[in-house]
Length: 245
Ligand SMILES: Nc1ncnc2c1ncn2[C@@H]1O[C@H](COP(=O)(O)OP(=O)(O)O)[C@@H](O)[C@H]1O
Ligand SMILES: [Mg+2]
Image 1 (spheres, rainbow, N blue to C red):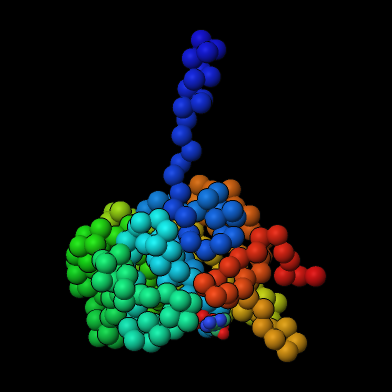
Image 2 (cartoon, rainbow, N blue to C red):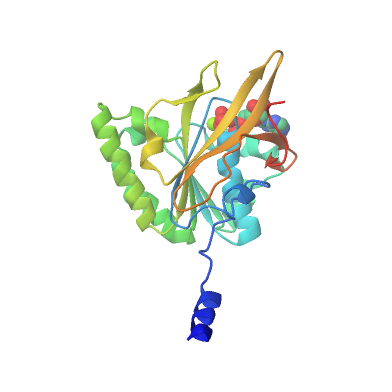
């Protein structure tokens, strides 16, 4: 009997994880995102949301063989390609290989986001995407005429994404007050499976970038606020360094 239970224990498989492609981040969250979860990435303007979202897809395709779809509701395709080229990422080349698909939605399409969902699912199926980034969900929220409708619409979208077998990263605009506490424009955080904050903190005469894992369902997290650097290959998190002296 004892032998049998020992065997059962050894054959217990650790749940799989989706590596984020961001050096330093996986060690804070048991190895990565949970498969098919919806992760919100909140932060101020200039905190690195678009960069991290694209890095998740770029490294996902390059290092883990997982195709990704990037849905841009704010930035044009050209400006995305140019901005990200600064990190040495050739997005057009990945698109040619069907490892990445950038979908840019125009404002009138955002207003009827529900009508885009079928097309979006088509794109996901077309390249066999395992990852999706949507930048930003704030644009979708603003397109609803009431908070109630926005909440319902968002819950529906998140359920769809989970059902489409992709692990999603949704960026969300927030503001940080003088105490350094983050305020989302809308409570996206409550609805998603995991929440990451990116900080762009002012220190006397410079700004300091940092990341915090606020919540992640089913995961033991390290919620220390960790310094972040924008390096040659994108964003890097430093779990062993301190933001506050
Ligand atoms: N090549 C680079 N090296 C270092 N920092 C950069 C580089 N390119 C952009 N940044 C910084 O990245 C930030 C913008 O990142 P972005 O992902 O667009 O932020 P967000 O989407 O949150 O507004 C800015 O703070 C900018 O200074
Ligand atoms: Mg952005």
